[in-house]
Length: 358
Image (cartoon, rainbow, N blue to C red):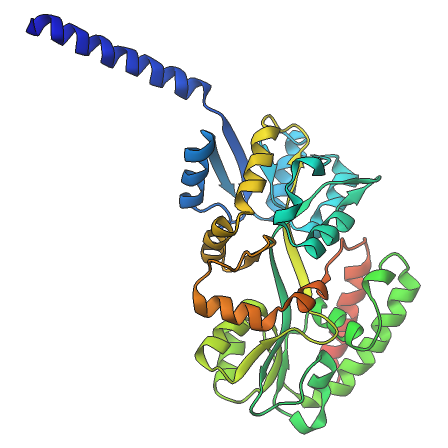
């Protein structure tokens, strides 16, 4: 009897083992090329438990993503996450992506203005190649007790704050001042003469404002030190840096300027030779669920384009986000489009002249 039972158990175990091997052999895999923090282990495990699909995560950055896909003609991965301003140019030049089938995206889960902005900025020959995922901005960090009148970038030039202002002397400050001065630099991207005219006006303003600036900050830690000490009362900042300051000193508010924060979005795109397109769409719709989005916010440090994506975020972080970005401020974000060849060289010359001005 025991021998018979032993044979039965052995047979069951052998059958189970063969079933497991067969299951593993047939298991789907989604090969995801993404940024650190965008596919946390817990989210990957939840996705597999629900769908049976494994997720093979390769962390990368914009340059590496384009390089990898260019080298293989769009093969090797099923879903990638370049920034939206790196999609249209790479597609036009290297043909490494395939259009997104928007009918397979649950648009009700995505903030409409972000979906529309990303579609616009990733469209090539009438087809959209990207949908939004993780995003962030540069905006204002203001000590409202000491600089209550600062509401927009041009307020950083107010003489009454002389020696108390800081910003980073990089291309975003050119865009910020242009919008604050009533111009639209993004609309002039394809007209170099018009764009140069905008740059000339911004350059003159930045040189005029130079005596007011305490320091051009180079990194988040430097800005935090300047504002925490009270040496600087208002600055152009990254939103994550601003929220750290707000958490430590509530009188320092992180605010969207009246002319609009400047925003970047890391997208979802389909590599041209994806082998598991169905799994890619399942992943996109899965991570746009509010409870899943909150896990990605915690891991990545930035919010996502998911509707109610802040709902399950830690209470303090959620309040800071909501105070900075009511719906109208989100809809007013100026999203960076692809930069045409030659513009960054033009901008670099302006920045050099501002830096050298006495």
